[in-house]
Every structure is written in C-alpha cells, then in structure tokens.
Image (cartoon, rainbow, N blue to C red; front, side, top):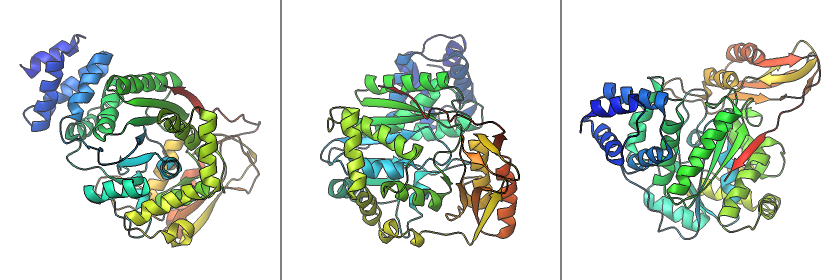
Length: 434
C-alpha cells in the first residue's frame, strides 16, 4: 500500500477503506509516514471530508494506536465529559463532583491549557499539593473509594492524536469536522467510560463559529459514539462571551466552589445541570431531566457535591481545607478595576480576546514551556445584557504588578462592545443532540 495513492484517492473525493485508514494511522504513529505526506492527507480530508464510516474507522484506529484504559476494576457506571474548549470553562470542577455525589463514577483524564483557553489540570493545581500525576493504582482506588479522580493524560493513551494534533495546529487543518470528531472521540473511547457527555461550544470564542457548524459537529460526535457502542449526548452551548465571570486558574476554582456551595447562580450552574441531567438519565439514575436536576440541586443543598470536590483534592494529595477556605488558594498581589467611562448596555464581549488578556497576565501558556501564574486573571463584573453606568467597573484585574494590571485593564476595555439601547441576552443552551 502506498501513501501517495491514499492521498490522491482522498484528494479526488473518494472513500478510504478501513485497511487504508489503519495503514495511515499505524504508519504515522510508528514514524514510517513523514509529516509532509500526513499533512497532504489532512488537507485533503479538510477539503473533501469523510463519511460516517470513515470517521468511525479513523477514530477507532487512533484509539488503538496506543494503550486504552481498562476501567473494569471500577465498580458501577463510569461517565466522562469533554468540552470543545472555551474561555472561563471550569465546568469539570463543578459537574464532576455534582455527578459523583449522585453515585456515578468519574474516572477522567484531562489536559493542560495552551493559548487563551485553560486546562482543567492547571486549575486543579491551584489547590496546594494537588498531584495530577497519580499512579493507575491510586487512580482506580480513588474512583472506587470517592467516586471521582481527575488525572493528566498519559503519554501512551492515543499517541496518534498527539502527533496529528500537533501537525494540524501548524498546517491549517484544525477546523475539520472529521478530524475534530476523531480527535475527541478517540481519546474519550480510549479512556473507557460507559457514558460520554460532550459540551460543544459555538460562537466567537470557539472553533465552531455558527450554530449550524456546532450542530453538525455534535451530530457527528454522537453518531460515532453510538456506532462505537457508547451512550453519548452532546449539548450545544454559547461561547460568544466567557463562561461565568472568572478567567484564570485559581479564580476559576474559586468560582466553581461558589457554585458548589449554592452561592452562585447563572449559566455555569445551568450548564452543569444540563450536562449532569444527561449523565444521570443515560446512567439510569434518573428517569427524566426534571428528576435528574432535582437530584443534582439536592447534592448542592446538602453539601455532598462540595464534599466530593474535597475528596477529589485530598485523594490526590491536595489540601482539602482550600475547598472550604478559598483564601488558601493562590492570590495575586494586585487587584485593579477596569473602569468604563460611559453609560450603556453590554452588547458583546470577545471571549477569545479576554482569554488573551488573562494569558498575557501569566494565566495561560504562549508555548508548551511557559510557566503559569495560577493567581492571575480577570473577574468580569458585567456580562452581555447588563447595564453599565459611567465610572463603573467592568472587571477586576488580578495581576502580579500594577503596571501589568493597568495594561491588562486597557486591553480588557477593548474586549467590550457597549451600545446605548438595552440588549437581550442570547439563549445559552442552544440544543441537545442525543
């Protein structure tokens, strides 16, 4: 079999066979197929697409390119959640404890952030002592004992995706639905959960700019999950503005704790209730969404969801006291207000640009080697639809120095679009694809 023949076949819009797809993934993972040939095939896939059978085979070949996680030592229903990425997305910190408190086992592999989007692993390291590199034995023990563990992805899990994603990132082939679906689902299937729930972001701060694109991606993700024998649900959500109010690692952890304490309402809680209801109904713990949401809210009210977060932290060598006393989390030495000079209503907040403000403060990585400052970031005081008075603060900047804070405040003000007339807040949950 020749790689050139396969490239030409896809270039001409023809369907690849299972054997051809397996040949490509196996050869590229082993290093037998060079980057320049793989780049050509990735571009051909982006331009010509793949049908559902091709996408499934690509997903399965990538999944089997390395080790898969056997979760059979864990008792009960295992669930996993994935987000397509966004600014201020601390959903896992809220959702996973909420669901674990209802008896679903969360055995989750998460990644670090790169660029303007944050990673769950980085956020968890805001807890003093927290260890994301626990052994497989400890990982399984914690899930069985506490119902929850969140660890960093192992190098041996889905190595094909790691190589392919790095190549896609530098060849302009990231926004391809077949490649996005196979990247996400190969990792989720390799991680071994019974129920997979997917948060598909749509808007200026995500890869999918339109609702139609997001729905197409959601339908492909759920179709591949079903074809692979997994219960899979996708929720399409708005990412035209940051999720919640906090952007920055320790700040996002603090906001997640406020939600778990029942102190904070809004779209973050609504998202976690929607995703959580999907998990509980698919797991058979609740008969319908209404019953599931009632159970999840009861877990917040009685403190069991917050206790699950404390157990997660303690089980991975972190200081559980920080769950109940957030003053123990990293705190930036400077807090500075970004003041608006005129009145009006918030019409838009550029999520990607707010993420970049946090990144330049030190809260994100410009390269893989960048060292993150867990304490810095932004807390938005005004969101889309809110009224603003002249002289009022739009956000609080948390920075390592006054100079950086003032620079960030100027950049943040440019992220806001303020108009004279009242603005209707857009629908946050765009749809659910089962």
